[in-house]
Image (spheres, rainbow, N blue to C red):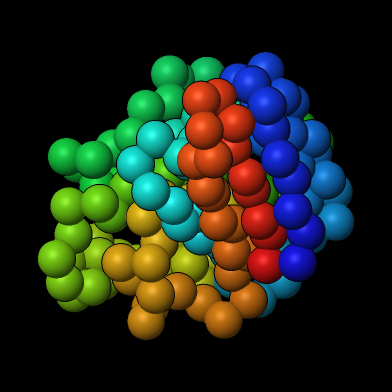
Length: 153
């Protein structure tokens, strides 16, 4: 496990950007999508991380939590990610999900089985039984003020 403590929003953004570059340089999805499972209380930094991560991928649309529509799909146009075989970024927010079947009915199995996809899930603990075993788990904790702790498992 790796821990990172951020003292302000700028450090949190820098961490998310560096993490995106590092994980995508290391991981080339062979057997299914690259899945990032974000867990943490409200206000702990999940959406900020998701926004900066998407920006690092070159996602042009403004990234905001898809709380009411559950997920958004973006095409990756940056050639460096396409060279790694990644073509799409899926941003799930399952905060309002009450049953994992709701996600399964949205084509979840197909999305996570496609090695061309990068999938980021906020509130991933709500669907822990359907997350792939090789997903990257990222826990966020609000310490005090602008201070946040991020733990990667």
